[in-house]
Length: 339
Image (tube, rainbow, N blue to C red; front, side, top):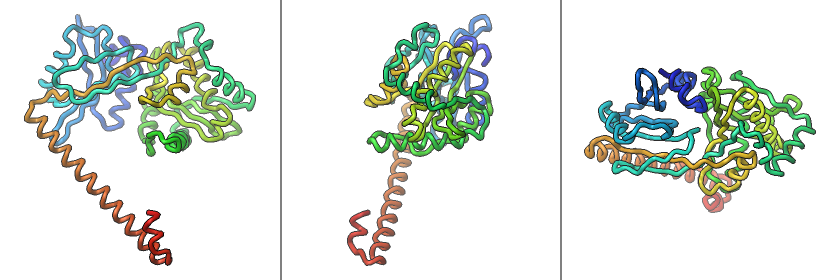
């Protein structure tokens, strides 16, 4: 059935047998939600099922409303209840334009935007920005090469370069994650769900990008570049090379991933590759009974309170240690003031 789903959505890297294996390797329980007619899947989505102490949830990673059955949302909610699911998370990674209706049991909603390169378009290169052209030309003159690999040895450099990129974003005052999952990237490679492309010069990795793939689609999962890579235009050259190679391999649609609202710099960077913005929704629905919803809300409130209390205790301990060190060094109140 998973192979049937991949045939229905050949441009979606989140609807492949390899992605199912990735979920399993990550310790998650994959579920297939689908409508079949005459034994053939007409519409569907892959998800991850999770059972907690007080809440059972289903996270649909990439749901498309194109060719969806009539009455989809009510039937999806009813089927979730019958399976004992309390919370339904619907995401739209690598999906075409998707509008999720507002329903009475909605608890959270977010509008998101992805940038997609149409590799079938004969003139997509003509839409490249002048800045991206200059950087790609600079990298070519410096002899920067692009290599594709499925070897897990490439993950170390990938994670390190992600850290470099996030550090730059943090320095600009942007919200950016500071830790990354090596295991997740390794799982993508081991299961065949994706590959890594890296830009190198003299054996030094300057930029790296992890790409998930399906028969005709690809998704920019994560990337990073060193300060030298940014200076030499390695990121721009890398993504353009990836686009060219994916196109040669029969990929028609390459999503450069989502952008948070207000991050105009990242929007300009992705749009500079000739990518078109696609407006998408993500939403969470609590489909369980009202009593269960109250119980879950209380449990999460207690969890958040305990985490906040633990964080405040840790901060107090750190401040006390700083003050003690300051007294020991004779700087008195200066140490406490610095903390």
